[in-house]
Length: 442
Image 1: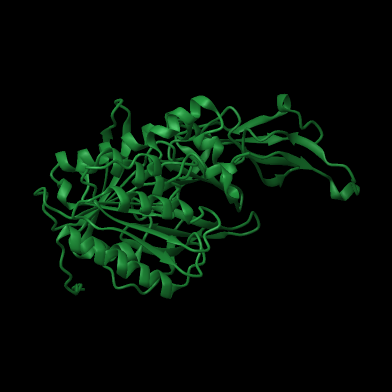
Image 2 (image 1 turned 60 degrees about the horizontal axis):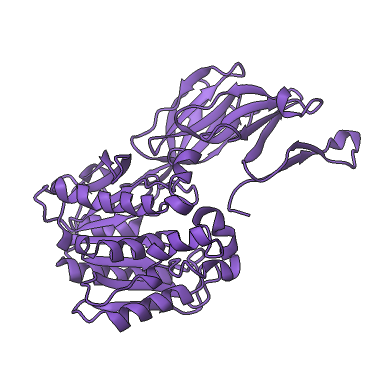
């Protein structure tokens, strides 16, 4: 009844078993079997461990009381687990950054894998029979590069790197921590060219999501590089509702605590203004899907903070979202209007129901697609209609509708380019930016 949680059962094929035996039942927690080692299952779970842990499960005695803890829950969130030679490769999300270690089978750290800097690991590939492994590393100004790790001396070397005309050394990535409305400290990545001065006048893109236990970690986007190359500042806060700090952080931004997510986003903008990165006339906010809800809600709650709003394929009619396609599965994050208490809470922030007359809203470009069966385009149609009917100011309230396209996955390069051109043209115009080609000096 949500986007996570599962049960686990097993059968011993060597015994030609026809019946599956239960390891874990119910959908409250996550369970995944990493490997069978010496006749035991190595299992990853967040049962009674919001940041996950690793346990041994003996198939002869699979009951919970017989599980043996291998690597206990840490402060950082445990993500990927793989086997590599005689070691267990374990990847953590530490303050929204990737960290990777090799553990021996006694649960002790044998080696920490050295990474190029602040960034994200992906696609670790190896096996207990191999003495080499491969993984990808990326960051905001570092294109996704594949590295080879040698077991003999733990050395790493570049196995493949894309040919992208970007000079990572021209950019700086900071991670800051700022207080939200209730005092909760929230982390945020800020990316800019090294020569950008903090004079309070820089065009800034504030991007967020804040939901469904999804983590926003450093990643490379050639589309965003266009903005950074022109002197823009990119800011990505790790809002409550996400998975950057485990299940507790996720739950703090759900149902009757959803306003925390919007408060975190608003506080991020206030921090950027206070620290002289930018000012309200230079901030564009962007988010897609659940992030589209984020943008829609915050542009209505604090229109004075933002110049441009870019809600993409957003969940914007919060009273009826669960009536369409897969929307019912989001109730664990949002709650529903079918429950009186939840209705009263949701109604206060639902973007479609909170557009007011006489308010100066940011210049808005809503984007959706006519075949989006995840977040049906009716959400965006309704929000655009409300804004166009009630807003009488000078800022445009536009909607861009892709034809023969969906929620975003699988969108061909040509459509991505068209959308990027329209989006950046809108942003550049309203933030007073001009475009000039960048020549990197190597």
